[in-house]
Structures are given as structure tokens and as C-alpha cells.
Length: 232
Image (cartoon, rainbow, N blue to C red; front, side, top):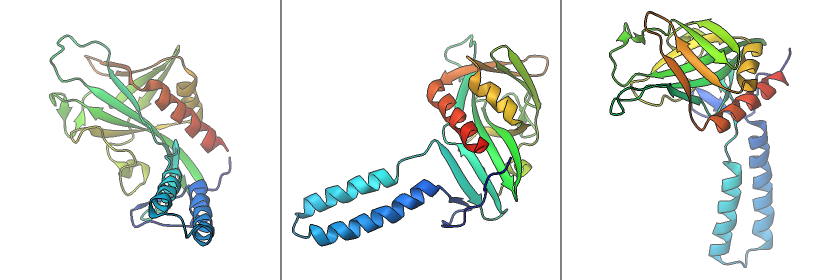
């Protein structure tokens, strides 16, 4: 599988630089349009001119479902779906107890043409009673249940250094959330996109089961778009 992973046309000061080719083309095109319009409609009122600029700005900043970024410090290209999947505990005995959540996001890391794929978990245990040695119990090994298929994964690491990036790719839901990274294959990601449902079961003597919770359709659509993008 070959796919261009390095687009060096524009960098931002952040460690991760936006590399959306479509967006860069739009910025260039919008600049040409603005120049032409300025010559043609000098006589228009200030209010109309401001309205036109706002419309152009809104189009240029439209969010994409899949993002490509260059990590300038590690020289790897990161591709990820913008909307993480959110799961929560299947059953909760006390409605007043803080709910536990999982965020799940797919990541491709392109290191000079060598491609690796990972799932990121943002683990939120609001009670914080399960946390030991900076990581939650039961997530050293997890099982993804995608329809009738079960995928067992062992944790690769608890920080972004495990996947070779200089900083976190996804934003955590809560400041107390803990990161976990699992290496996966494209076939396993495809199972997650095609399955009717998705669950995550932790390991240990008292396993927990998480089910889809918030905006599952939008998140799964973005995951499917991620898969289409990395297969190009």
C-alpha cells in the first residue's frame, strides 16, 4: 500500500501542522476571488463587503471528518478521524454515581512510508478508585466486540510516545482521563466500521463492559471515512 504521507506546502507554529490539500487550495482560491471582487465592487456598502468576507471565512474553516497533520518534531504524518467514538458503562446501579466513559479514535502514523495503525482510548473513571500506577486496572488487555466478532488487544503504551508522536492526537474528554494506545490492523478497523454494534470489555477479575453512548452515527461515519482515506 502506498500513499503520500508528507505534504510540506504549509506549516503552522504548532507541533502538528494542518495538511488538508483541499483546504489549502481553497485558501489560495479565496484570495484570488477576494482580489477580483475588490476591484469590481468597491462601491458596495461596508456591510455587504463584511458579509461576503464572513461567508468566505465560514467556507474556508469548514471542518473535515478526517485530518492529516505533520508532527514537525518527530517527522511523522498523522491521520485521524476528527470525531472520536464515545462509549459508557452498560449498567450503572446508582444513577447518582459519576458515569465512566471511553473515547475511541483511530490513528495512522506514516513514518517515511512505513504505516502503522492504532486505536486511542481516553479512559474516564470519575471515581478514580480503579487507577493504579497512572493507569486504570483492566485496560492492560481489552476485548472489542464488533457485532459477532471479538478482537482482543493488549495495550502498547499509556502515552503518545508509544506511537511515536510528540504530543497527544485527540483531546481528552476530562482532565483526569487517562490515555491508552493499542496497535491494530486495517482489517480490525474495518470490522469496527461495518459492525452493527460495538462494545468494549475490560479484563481482570471484575470486567466492565462499555457500549455506544453519544452521537454513535456521526462517529462511526467519520471512522468509515478514515478507513476510506487511508486505503487510497
